[in-house]
Image (cartoon, rainbow over all chains, first blue to last red; front, side):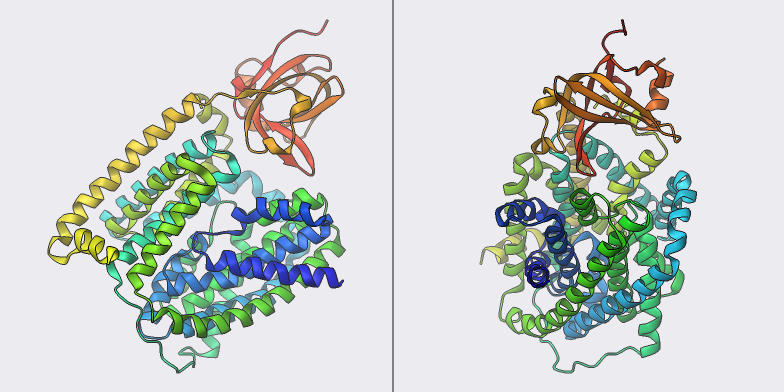
Length: 413
Length: 150
């Protein structure tokens, strides 16, 4: 028991590191965690606890760089605008507080919803699986047409098509091992391109206010948590459909225009998605995230008691991570205002490039360059960066429609 | 100091609109040329020939080719075919998913061609499913039936 608590705390520290380091992700750290477990002689259960605690804590800590530095992960990329809006008003801490409230609220509500709906997931999954590509096509169509203006609709379609072709070639090629490919792809599209734009536009971090109150009603918070939890579970169900797409749909359908309610919803989707992804291993025997794939490899079959153990770890880790995020959200701006924002952004850009080079070599840098160019295209064409998710959406549509073997034969790769 | 210099060079306001257009064009060109470059690099990658006994988790995610005898065949109601290939004492699982089976059928190979004792050459990505190593072929040309059952 004590070993599991200690490993959960260790996972929180690894999650803190990967959450605060721009472009780092638990998936990137998984090979290191595996080697580390071998060195410590961890049992499969202990390793599973370490991975779950790292993945959960990272979700909370991720919002700190995405709000204060503007170097988000793909899953928090949309928080840049609403988060930065509050940051520029001197209310960066309020933005952090809202993401923590959204995360914890969605954890509680998500667990209740998953428990209530659990008897139906397996049959619903079997029923919908043959048609899942139609659902993804509908999401892509929605993403394109939600841009409204004809010029933007065309630009969005171009970005989705370009990133989709890029995804089909890169993800099916052998220029890099499969587990390393997504790192330069997503870092370029969502991390580096955001930083380059941020470098050209933001000159300094504004002085942050001491007033820590929330500018949003309790009713609005509850509504956002509810929408976030539901959307998180749906995202967990639909392969390749990411947090960003779900957030855009919720924002569009639910009228979540306000930055505050948007941040609560976005954080709720992140947590709801991760919780469902882990529990889906037990419910539908199908992993839905990098960490759940790793757990399936370690534990093979999950029993009901394993799920209870993982839920316990998720709750314990989320509580501590939430408190730590709030503490860091207060302390980090005090440190950041003393720094030159452009130098900081440039340092982060250099760090990301160095990381990609160390992990994936010159081939990874080439992939990073192309994906950054596609990410920057979104900024210059003034469309949402989430269209770059075509890199996963188009290959997924082809996979679920059974077209991948024919496409690979045609491409001869 | 260096960041200010870079900022002045690339983002000074009077030239912003012109630079935006140049950067837009540069991004389009980098994306398209990069795509072509990656595609031709992908064409040049060839799988490494590996004996079944030498396949381990260090090859996870890599493209390899291997040859072995079919020792077990299992078909799934959804149209998937699962082979177990052996080479001496070593064995490996080969899942052939329904989408690939459909492509094989179009090439004149159906599930009944995979019989116990036949030798096949498989090219595919090494993966792990529920703790077991497997090679996942991706297209019809990844599967070659080398000899007929005697």
